[in-house]
Amino acid sequence: MTTRRVVLQLLNEDELRQIEETALRILDEVGIALEHDRAREMLHGRGCRVEGHRVYIPPQVVQWALQNVTPHQEEYTPDGKLAFRFGDGAIRFHNSGGPPFVIDLETGKRRPATTQDVADITRLLDALEHVDVITPLFGPQDVPAEIMELAATSAMLKSTRKPVSAAAVENPADVPYMIQMAQVLCGGEEAFRRHPTMSISVSPVSPLTFTERVTAAIMAVAEAGAPFHSLPAPSLGATGPITLAGALAQQHAEVLASFVLVAAVRPGAPVTYCSRINPIDLRTAVSSWGGPEVGLAGACAVQLAHRLGLTCDTYGLCTSADRVDAQFAYERFANAVMPALAGADIMSGVGGIDSGLAGGYEIAVIDNEIISLLKRLVQGCEVNQDTLAFDVIREVVARDGVFLGEPHTVMHMRRGEIWMPGVSERRTGAGDESTVGVLARARARAREILQTYVVEPWPADALRELDNILARARRERLGE
Image (cartoon, rainbow, N blue to C red; front, top):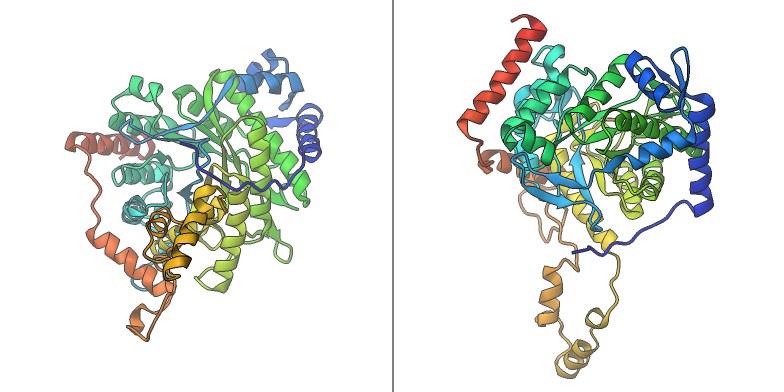
């Protein structure tokens, strides 16, 4: 069933065309730095011009690639069950990933995140009704850097039954381990190729650079049959033009170049178009994920992705604030509401704070509340004979003028006509001062979930096999 949704278009047809044409000119005339011998040979064989490590991709090769990748439209649970399909009008959400610090739920202080934090926050996200896909929220600092992404992915897989995405890959050697972990839970290699149960993100280096490791990681994801998420993150005025239009053109070129590589490796591979454009603080030249440019760029990227028939994953629930305060609220909402109204398929950022450097349990609970509000906004105002309620008005006015007990009222209340908050302020009296305020209630809700919520456990043999894969990675990487 298609969900009703308000859609706001920021760019008109001519503006979209200009961005697309500029991106194609960038690839054709500026080219990409491609530091991988086999990849250069493959693209040369497809009609690209190669000069040293620089590869120039003509428009016809881009068009060929777009005809030889598949939009990632189906999300499966780790055991291989269809969870949902994109394109039905609904907006979905997933958490941010990778921060090294956690806001401790008991002390409120920042500390290094651990593998247990990855497991605990995953279980919390599994319980939150508005989180649809889970990725490892933290980069655990209690394991060696060489296996950090693998340890995080393993801890996540053990702690949820929702659709998942692996930790973003920087080392191509991580990909086979991650795929093996996913295969353990879904029934093996053939089952995974039939219905891939874990997507993997790789980030090209802006501007327009595909290092040997990045390229090898992209190729490994494609060869494994996992859905590939292209995740460039140009910073306005630093690793991309300071203008939104220029950054969008560059990001579009970087995403398209990623898809050319994927199509060359494995025609038909599933892909997702992602937007992570971010501004810099002009006083410090440090990326600042609270500026409204994140949400504006994401909203524009949605239109660019949808013109290509691709699913779009944007950032939106983000802030530069390092605590829950007024800045946290207005930056987070401003960056989320624009791509939500623009028709984003899935939005990232749940649980993250401080420009992605930290995450928190109560942050995830508050984000769940914000998402419920966003979902009500994008529903808009539906006008039909039922919602106009003429017969109800006529009957109630003639009787007592009170609509509260009408079946029509009850039905539409259950459908969410009026937004009902979970942890937001709706005080009618003094109450318990320890629970006053959104932050206190969010912490209480997070504690309650962690104390009571149980994820359906995986079979013991599957858990042992996940441990074996991680142990093998330790031996092969660390010599343990």
